[in-house]
Length: 216
Image (spheres, rainbow, N blue to C red):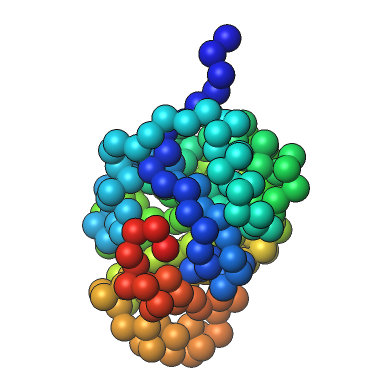
């Protein structure tokens, strides 16, 4: 049997820019390919191309940074079936592993040790029809649900989803982020406070530090 491999856009070491490990040095493994086309996507360069690497090659490159945290991202990592054994292998190596996924593909086969950061796509993303709501009952306290908000309408939609789906009870964190350049961050912060929402407001640290240059 051929050795398992994945198509990789990049592997790099930087600070985690969002979610509950924000600010912590992290190795990012960015897989190539995504079936979604969100209008605000900041990683279109990962849709195509990439380099095929074996699991052993990926693990060796990750290990060279001597990290504590590893984030598997994309694109949409779960679009490649061998993402699942990669996640398990990273956990076996003792890393604290997170997975950034669009929420459009099933998460039930992801290793239970992984913190799954699951997007719920808002109407203004252009891809809200792709939300796989069967994933919601599969969430646990290791997981995080993320909303990227482009407008007040998106905020109102997300606020209702948090309540309707009881997300603050199902997941360890619910994250509200303003879409960079589309929604004023202070406005979103004020809305969250005014409505006393059970969510974590967040800005994308990497965009503030590096203007979201690839490799950061």
